Structure formats: C-alpha cells, structure tokens
Length: 368
Image (cartoon, rainbow, N blue to C red; front, top):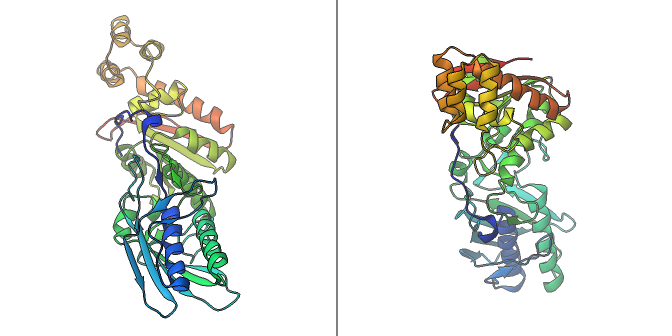
C-alpha cells in the first residue's frame, strides 16, 4: 500500500474467478469425512456453493488413519485476483464426534483466533467465518446423507505459513491472532473486487466501537497512515487501512458512527475526494485540473500559477507551485474534502482531514 496511484487492472470481464479459503476448506473437509465413512478420498472433490456454483478441486494431500480421523487439503486458486492467500494450502482435519454434537470448528496452525469483541464471532472462537462454516456444514451433511453418517464431526482447519500470510492482512489490528481468517460469503473470488479488504475495513470499525475507541482515522496509504497516527497520537487499533475505498468506509461509518473521525491521505487522492470521488483508484477517478486550478485561484494563487495549473500534468505539480508561492492550496483542498466527507456521513461524526506529501509532511488540514 502506498499513497501513489496503483496500476490500472485489466478488464475484469476477461479475468478468471477463483475460490475463497472457505470454499477450499469445505472441499477438504468433505473429502476427509467421505474417506472416514467409505475408506477412500474423492479426488477431485466437488461442493455446491450458496449461489449454486459447483467447484471441483484436486486434493494436495490426503491421509486416513483408520481411527475415525482423516485429513485432506487443497491449494487455493484465487483466479486472477491478487489475493495474499492464492496458492496457500488449506487443510481440514476431520474427526468423528459424539452423537448430537453436530459440526464443531477448531483453529489449527496458521488459522487465527478471535481475541477482541466487535466481530461476528465471539472472543475465543477460531477465525472461521459464518459463511465458510455454513459451507463446511453443508458439505458434511451431503456426505452424511450419501454414506450413512451422523454428521457429528470436529473440523480443524489449518494453513501452513498462515501466520506469515496474516502479517499481510489487517488481522492483527482486528485482534485475530495466530493466523489468517477463513473467509468467503459466496465461496467465489471476484478478481479485483477487493471484497476482503472492504470487509476488513468494516470489521475494524466494529472492533474499535466495541472496545470503546472514540476517535478513528482512515488513511489512503502507508505514508499518510504513519504520519497521521504520529500526529494524532492514536492507538494502532484506531487506524483504518482505507486504501482507495472511501465509499465503502464512509457509508459503513455513517451507519456505525464514532464521535470523531479523521481522513488522511496524499495530496492527489484527497484532491479527488474533494472533487466528490469516493473511489480513489486511478482506474475510476482522475483529478479535474480545471477545478483544481479554480481552487488555487480561490486560495489566492496568481494568474500565472492558475494558468499553469490548468495545463499541469499532475496534482503534485500544482501543489509544489502553490507551496513555493506560499498559497494554502492543500488547506483549501482539505476544507473541500471535509465537506464531502461530512455530507457522506450525514452528520454522524465530527470530521477532520489531513493532507500529507509523499515524505509524510503535513501540508494541509481542516479540523472539526
């Protein structure tokens, strides 16, 4: 994550979809349970997802110990999505359980455990979300009906190197410790939908509210995040890794508010926000240079600088001219961006906006 615009992804309609960690875990659990009941593993193994898709996955590992226990794994294929868990081995160990216990879930190595309130799962539970639990339960039920089992099993999901993968996610901030979360409401990974990222933003708000934090800050990139956290003196749990998803964050925050909220980012992205864009990636939004020039003029920019701004290649070029002329352009951009945020939040929070340059220096602000 950085405060610079990323590459423009290819045409999404031409990209291959993949399967979530939850779908992979369900396939592995189904294969392991079927091996317990029949003595052999289905390979490949197929399941039916909540929306009717029927993926079939090859097994990477299969082991039957003959004592009511079996283990199977599949390799996650996220399609053309740049998912941090693409290529990870998703392992399900299944053991027969006492009658009437149903399906119970356990975290093996590399799968996290919930430690903070505010998430959909209570503290102490393995980070296997409700969607994947439902998929696993459905897969176990299908095997039980086909092969005469009771469906009473303990399912332990593990992910080799899952703790290292979790360091690339927001799990630590959410209080999910020890590994990754097993995710996926539909079981399908849509390339570049970034649903997992937006999900993590929402869960970050939930955890912060549940733990009593009254001031949250969201940043567009790592540079602005570090600078904002130091300036505001906030705990790491109060920082939201927003990236380009102002829309997903602000609309959720409007429904689940905190008393005080600060938006922080690089000049170009806050400039786009000030012009009403709520998805800040370069694939969907651009700085309107004429509007930026008008803002410069209103802030006291000279005719020469305003004219140069209209023909500038980048927003940063305009900012540097304004700073050299000691015109408070970034402050004006922060004021306008604050207005957009306040309108989107509909008065739910007291709002502040911080603007940083690429070195993390504060160049503009507007505080509530």
